[in-house]
Amino acid sequence: MGNRFTEKLAGLGQLSEDDLAILGAVTAQSRTVTKRRDLIREGARPGPIFVILEGWACRYKILPNGGRQVLAFLMPGDFCDHHGGLLAEMDHSIQTLTSVEVATIGRQDMDSLMDRQSIAKAIYRAQLGDEATMRAWITSMGRRTSIERVAHLMCELYLRARTIGLTAAPNLTLPLSQLLLADSLGMTPVHLNRVLKELRLTGAMTLQRGNLVISNPGQLVQIAGFDENYLQRRLRQAA
Amino acid sequence: MGNRFTEKLAGLGQLSEDDLAILGAVTAQSRTVTKRRDLIREGARPGPIFVILEGWACRYKILPNGGRQVLAFLMPGDFCDHHGGLLAEMDHSIQTLTSVEVATIGRQDMDSLMDRQSIAKAIYRAQLGDEATMRAWITSMGRRTSIERVAHLMCELYLRARTIGLTAAPNLTLPLSQLLLADSLGMTPVHLNRVLKELRLTGAMTLQRGNLVISNPGQLVQIAGFDENYLQRRLRQAA
DNA sequence: CGTTGAATTGAAAGTGATCAAGGCGTGTGG
DNA sequence: CCACACGCCTTGATCACTTTCAATTCAACG
Image (cartoon, rainbow over all chains, first blue to last red; front, side):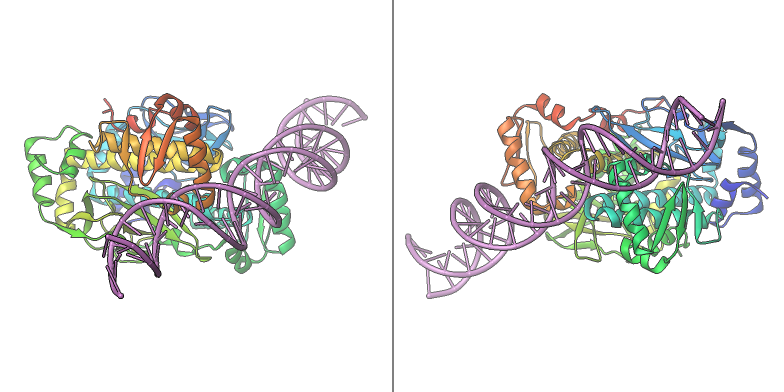
C-alpha cells in the first residue's frame, strides 16, 4: 500500500510505520491534471508543494529567443517544487507530459514532515539524487557527443523507471516526443531523429513511437559512457 | 566580524546573534590548501563537511574518454559538500583553483546546525541557489550559442562575486584559465579564445589575464540573455 | 478518406572542433 | 641581468558535426 511517493521515500531511508502513514495521509487527496498543462509557471509565487503520484512531467525554461530547454523529467513519486516557499519565485515552469495524478502538500503539512528526522532525511536524499542528475546533464551537454548524450539519457530514464517499478522488461514506454527529447538534449529534432536512427543501426536500442527497447544493454551503457553507479549512489544508504 | 561563510548565510535568512556565533564557532578553525589540489575526490566516502572561507575552487568530473567537465565554481562562503554524508560516495571531485582557506565542520556539528530552524533554512536556501545555477548552466549548454554562453557565465560570476563583496567596481579578478573556462562551458580552449575576442570587439566586456572588465553591462546582459532575477530570487526572502 | 501532428529524409549552410604554429609573460638558473 | 623554458594565450587553415530549410512519409483520428 501507499502510493508512488511513499514507496519512493521508503526506498531512500528507514521509515517507520508512522512515517509511512503520515506520508500517505498527507498525499491521500490527489487530483488529475490533463496532459500538456502547466502545473507551475515561471515567476509564480510559492503555493502548496506538488507531488506527482502517477504520470510524467518536465521542468523547462523558455528563452528570450523563443527556444525551450527541458531541465528534468519528472516521474511518479517525484517532487515538483521541494523548496516549499523558501524562494520568492519559480525560475522555471513545470508541465505535464501525460495525464498526471498530483497530490498537494500544504505548507503546514510540509513543515511537520520536515520536523521528522527520518522523513526529512529521505526527502533530502531525493533532492540530492535530483542534483546528481543535473550534474550528469551538465556533463552530457558539455562533453558528450550527441549519440552519447542520447544513449546516456535513455540509460537514465530506463534505470529511474525500473527503480520505481514502471518496468521489469528491457523496454519501456516513454511519453516523450522527439521534439521534447531534442529540447532536453540541446539539439534539433531533425538531428535527434538521425541519432536515434544511428543508435538503432548499432543494435543497442530502438526508440520508436515512444517505445524504448534496449536490445543490447551492455552496448548502450558503453556508448553512453554511463556510470551505473551515479543513480544508485543516491539509493544506497550511507552509514 | 564573522567570516565569508557566516556573512553569506546571514544574507540568506534571519539569523540571530546566537546563530551567527554558532556558525562562527564551528568554522573558526581553518586550514590553507594550496592551489590546484583536490579537496574531495570522486568516489570518496563522506567525511567532514568543507566550507570555503577564502579563495576559489570548482566541482568537476572526468569522463572515460579523458575529457573534463567543470560543474560549478565555488567562491568564498560556499559549501563543498552540503550533503553531510547522506550519500555513500561523491559523484564528482572538487579542486582548488587558488590557494584556499577551508573550514571543516564535523558531522556532529553539522547535525546540531541543522537542528536550528533558522540556520537550516539559510543553508537550504543556499542549496536552492546552487540548484538554480545548475539549471542555468543546463540551459546555457543546451540552448545558447557560445558567445551567449560565455557572456552568461561572466554575468553569473560577476554578480555572485559582487554579492559576497569581492568587488564593487565593474571589474573582477577571475583566477580561471581559458582552459578551465572552456571545460566549464563545453567548448574548446581555442574557440573560447575566439569568443572572448569577439566579446572584446563588441565592447561589452574584456577578459584578459584573469582580469574581467565589464565595460558595457547592459550590452553584456543583452548578449547573454541574462535574467537578472535568477540569482536574486534566491536572495530575496520568501514570505 | 482527408486532416493533423509527428517522424523521416535530403541538400546546403554554419558553427565549433581539430591540427598546427607562433607569441607573450613569468620564473628560474646561469 | 639576461636567456631559456614552461605554461598559457593567440591566430590561421581545414575538417566535421549539427543546424537550417524544405519536402515527404507515416500513423492516429475524426
